[in-house]
Length: 116
Image (cartoon, rainbow, N blue to C red):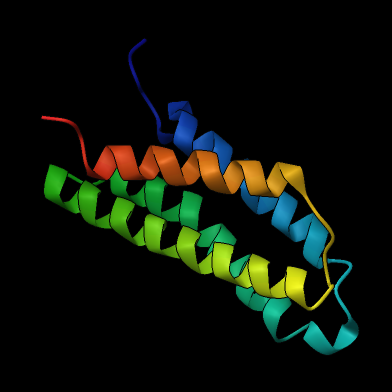
C-alpha cells in the first residue's frame, strides 16, 4: 500500500490514539494538577503524532529522522510522566495507554534503527 499522507502511517494513527487516551485520563486528575503534570502529559502526548506528521512532510530523510527522534523522546517523556501519575495514584492501571506506549515506542525505535 502506497503512503500518500502521514495519516496512512500506522505509527501516526496509534500515537494519535495515545494522545486521545491521555487527554481522557488526565481529565480526572486533581484540580491542583491542571497546570502541572496533567498539562505536561498532554503536551508530550500531542508532540508524538505532531512530530511524526511534521517529519513526514519534510524533504529529506535526515529531517524526517530528526522529527521521529523528537517524537521518540516525547514518548519517553510521556512514559515517565505516566509512571509518576501512577505512583501518585492519579491513574490506575490502564492497559490501553500502557500498550500504546509500548507499541508506538517499538515502531519509532525500529524506524530510527532499521536492520541493515
